[in-house]
Image (cartoon, rainbow over all chains, first blue to last red):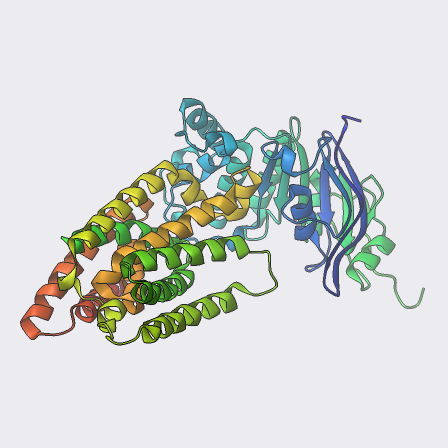
Amino acid sequence: MSDEVIKLENVWVRYGNLTVLEDVNLTVFRGDFLGIIGPNGGGKTTLLKVILGLIKPSRGRVTVLGGSPESKRGLIGYVPQITQFDRNFPASVLDVVLMGRLGRGKLFKRYDEQDKRLALEMLKAMEMAEFKDKPIGELSGGQLQRVLVARALASEPEILLLDEPTASIDEPTKTELYELLKKLNEKVTIVLVSHDIGVISTYVDKIACLNKKLFYHGSKEVTTKTLEETYQCPVELIAHGVPHRVLRKHEEE
Amino acid sequence: MAGLLASLACGIIGALVVVKRISLVSGGISHAAFGGVGLGYLLDFDPLLGALFFALASSLGMGLMRGRTKVSEDSAIGILWVTGMSLGVLFIGLRAGYTPDLFSYLFGSILTVSRLDLAIMFILDMVILLVVFTFYKELLALSFDEEFATVRGVPTRYVYLTLLSMVALTVVVLIRIVGVVLVIAMLTIPATIAWQFSHKLLRIMFGSTVLSVVFTTSGLWLSYVFNSASGATIVLVSVAAFILSSTLKSLR
């Protein structure tokens, strides 16, 4: 039982007449590196927010590390989409990473030596230590992304959730990020949401497809049919690292 | 003296308002405060205290209501804005006989600030200083990424409420200087200018406090020279400064 770190049972999320998540059942095990792919608007961000307890499901149950999401705050690290941030915000890289050390217990206290030490350690792990005093507005997309990961890691979480971590960065930086995540996976369970099919299939060990409904086989196998159901259109897919090319069926067949 | 006290509040809180982009909510709170001014006149107590009461009530209302009702925050602000103003006018009208100088509460009249007013402003300033520096890191996190702060277990709903309450206090401090209608200017302009030149929140707070002192003092002096409304002159000085600094920035 303690191997199941995240469990969603019959989860529905509805806003009035709009169904965002439909009867989602998902179990994530300790040490997994799960990639969730799907089209924009398919509910990927909502799914993460349900796991984080930011959104309450209209129906169904969410269990994280054996308890409710709210009770496990502090054990889950979150890397949100990079696009929502005000790049001009007056904070330095270190300021942002230290936010990962916040919590109920810290309310009336200052950041202490341990906080600063952990923040710097995570920055080093993300290869951003030399930028610690830089204003975040001066960072590139890839650099900011790494800072956000460092922030999530500063809390020493057991699970890391990432929302579109490669959205605004170029190919070589993407690879670097995935290498870093792969190393982290030795200690941390990772759930990553993306619409970038190609690269994630090389690094993750399990893939699920989400478009309101979740299609998951507990493995890395993704059939054309599943992808079609998810993306709602015939899919032509050429993936790096995937053992075979999966191409669209020709009309003649 | 009043100018200095006001500048402290609006410098610090203005920085947070501008950085978290809640100037609209702040406008709503300041106009709602006018209802309290009217109530003060109607029931015969210091209108500034009435303003404080209404401002705090509206900030608590806005904070608690957030995310809980179907009404959008925008609409709620609009409703708050006009309700406060209308109630204020209504209450003042209900008080039979003498109509007080509304102008000073709407547009400020720094020269008629009483000793009691100064005392209130000082106390509010101290409260603001205390709260902001105790919860500085939470306020910073709230302004940068509220969701993340929530995920970390920070009681963000309460921190936001605290922030709005500080805005309410600042509004009350500013009412005598620039009046209800122009409070939003003093909350946003000095901080916006300071933000153009710095990327550290503490420096923005300091800068906007200093700028605010400069604008208040020079605006007052100019209004004396030209015999113009003091509140409006102060605001126009700050607008001019903003135009100047933006031009300078774009020329770099």
